Image (cartoon, rainbow, N blue to C red; front, side):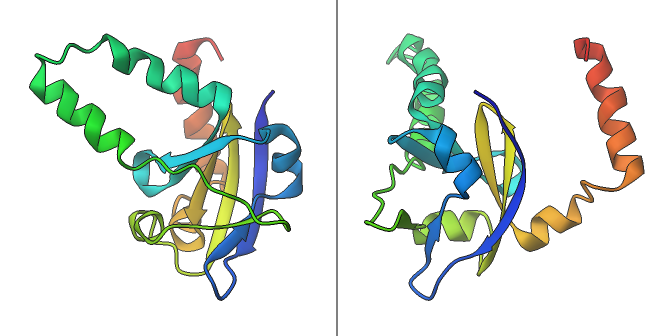
Length: 144
């Protein structure tokens, strides 16, 4: 299963959103939302979330600094409850972290989906040739 492409939508007046249909069909019933790198939110299917948290169980309780990092990361995780129309409320702390007001962009990034504020996503200049070329060059060291 791989998520790819971009989809734009708006939160409704009650800060509810719906996962775009092309992503929703692959996501499964259980999914999680957490803070992502760079100021986005990350949606993880249950399987990806399990892989994500598995290494945390290897960190000993005696490593207080690492345990604090685990706490900070896992405290951001939400498991949304969808209504009968497939909508869920995006919590205020998630909206604040990602600077989401109304317009959002969903981006498929392989195993997961990112949610960006429209403004932050536009600032990344994803579709411009020079940024695309830089991305291709950077990924070459990983054999891509």
